[in-house]
Length: 375
Image (cartoon, rainbow, N blue to C red):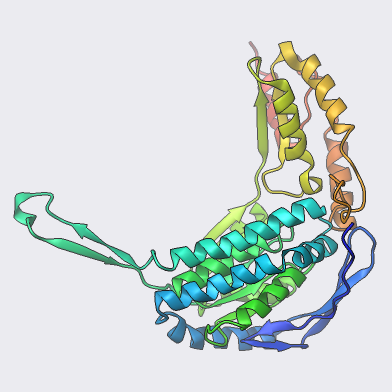
């Protein structure tokens, strides 16, 4: 079993400098309740310095040569690969994600930076022939792409490394500066990535990584100095942010409500295995988790038997144990919310509906309306 880490005080990355400023923030291991490390929650002053630095640094980042952006990104990818085991342990401790899944996320994080390094050489533009008609014979078009400006990035708790990398790496590849708000529950992985970024030749201040509370983070949403907001999280918060973002462009990656259909042609062993994994990976705290399963009536009894048997073999335990499938949820609030949803999801027996697991009040009400219509 991997050995637990103790990180002590972890500085935040403000305008190209590591600082112990703002409000102390304890990061707690969801599995044990122990403090993994203490970092800091940036306030308005730290955010302002990071924002000013991002605006100033953009004048340099947008002029970086393709190879300079590539080399910086390749360095970060190589460092992640080098320190993969340590990063996976840290990620598991701060998020509660089973170590097997944490190792996959770390590998994906390295791939994200390496892919961005390759794209840094390809995204600058293209040459197009325009001889689509006789009048345009011999004419050509040149398409140029320009960095949009400083970016505000907000990433979620469930993939604290890779989904944050999805914002930082493309920003660097495009020649943009970025201020990232990682999740306050598990920011330590990305603060470790900040050290790799700091070792590159990127202009100082082009990247800041600041844990913040929501009111402080909301300042980025409405700040016109940022030209793009990239947010990953819940639909309710995402659409609210878009409404408050002003004239800046907004990129949203929001939560899902994934359903699966199992019909009479299905390979039941394969379906059961995939649906178990899809439903229980990271305790269901994934935006594409399986939340509803629709099974054709004729095969339902056999599917249910196999599914229940397979779920019974899901291994619950210490997330640092490689044999563990299911670790803890992020915090007590997440547990209480899930218990509430389970209570709401009791089977509904109206009309012909007998074996249904409704995942939300809205879904249940919609179904009742549908089944109450005269035939």
